[in-house]
Length: 113
Length: 116
Image 1 (cartoon, rainbow over the protein chains, first blue to last red):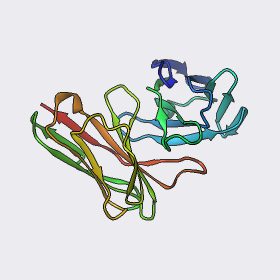
Image 2: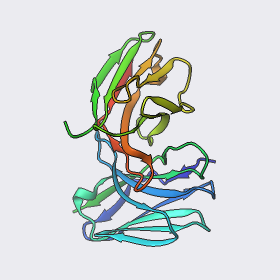
Image 3: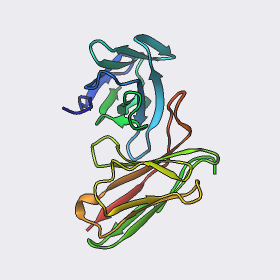
């Protein structure tokens, strides 16, 4: 089982709609969770991070974490064509293990006009 | 420059050749990471430095891969006797203080390696 699992997509949503991106993880002791956006041919850039159960909002983006169910999601409201990219879910492992980010394979989002 | 700089941006190597990829992190950033990203995949961890100390090299796929950061700033990833499966984008990332705080890694644009 992969440490971080994402549906590769593509996920296609119309402009103005809500895009919902999901990620599950295998290690219940994972500490912190991150969403990175990667445009084609470019490097990943951080969108949001979340540590605690519940929702965290930042502008059009909301990250949701449910540690009991071991999933984290990213909602993008009022989706724009410029949101079309690959969204990478990442996490840090349980305390005391290697200090690194482990990434999922990413979900490709297409926002259509 | 203000960001993480990597060179070369593109490298074509014949199978069996040695290659060296350079990373110049953001000035003052203590932590430096190397990741490998194959086409259509997420970045895979290779190795991590804190200053000049290589604290984790568990992701290096074989002893053909070697990384160093001798003065705690610029880092070099060396791949000996390249194989076709080494073809990927090699991403370097730096961070002011490891994964504490926001855990944000600042990535370079990557070095795309193609092994023929």
